[in-house]
Length: 84
Image (cartoon, rainbow, N blue to C red; front, side):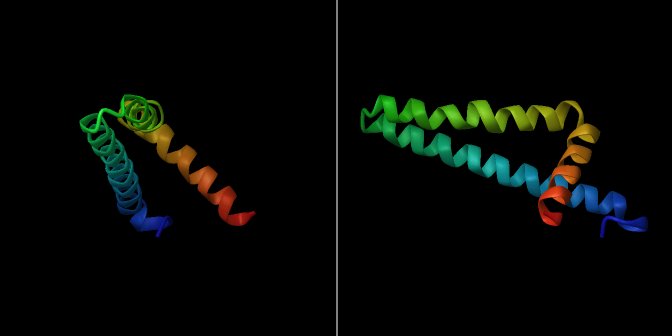
């Protein structure tokens, strides 16, 4: 699907899937952190908030700022992990 005529469509599908997965993961961690705060488990809540704010936000900002670089880097890393 990555070659030829379908390159633009493949790119759109890959970026949409990555975005949906990362936003879903981010929202799940935030929801669990809020549930922990309801139970007065502040340390656990802060630990759950750390991942979406450091990992997911960084990648989402990279995708927003430089979509071409993100897509090409993702394809190279994915290709290397599949080949090895």
